Image (cartoon, rainbow, N blue to C red):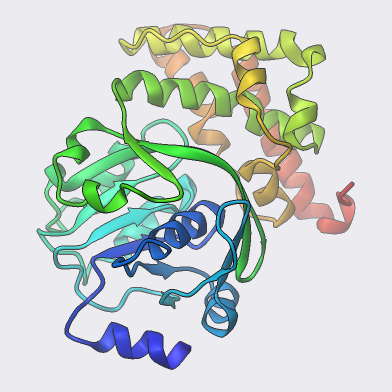
Length: 322
């Protein structure tokens, strides 16, 4: 299977769909694309994951039946002409991941950003400056999906969708993302949708890490007072940014439709840096910029960072999984 993948990649017909980031979200997207007849996405991920996919395919429990076979590599090493690059690496890794692609980016490369958090587009623009990709080829999407990386070659999907900014719908790639097992749709208000997702993540992600718990526990009403405080600060900051969004604790609790583990808790347990600076940290930073107090989000940010430091000091044995 690995030899077949290499022959395909070395042929004159280069892949037009590349998913950069073989974590849970990237794997679900790549598998959904590969399951559609006529599409052959390339998934770029970590060595163990890539090897497992080459040997036995990619399994996405909860979304697709059986294994999905698709090309997978550890890195891009070919020109990305007329290619959609769907980037699913974490926000903390985004700038470095894009800069590593400098030799292969082209004016016809389109980049779809699928990260959590505030300031993603600006971060990508900074990384791509001078690399030949026009700003008009840079798009942003919102992933509203629970997914867990369960091991090399295997992920679990808890359902959801991806919303894309309207400008992407005019690109030739939007049609390729239709009819998938994973729904991809155009957002009617990308600014509001981005802030809604940011606020939901600013509640669920850090609380899951601090409680060391899956989403069902985080959604319990006994934590609603803390959720309300986080959201109030976030909505005030969003308004200062010119975006009116209304999210309450009940909305966040309803948003939890499965007992999956957040990406932040998954990263914590694997010893990887969290995206806290792009969530609660961003809310606190914007609050300072606009003269709006955000002590709760600042405190949450500091708590998560303290716990991460403790995790580095103690190692995984200091935080046994329940």
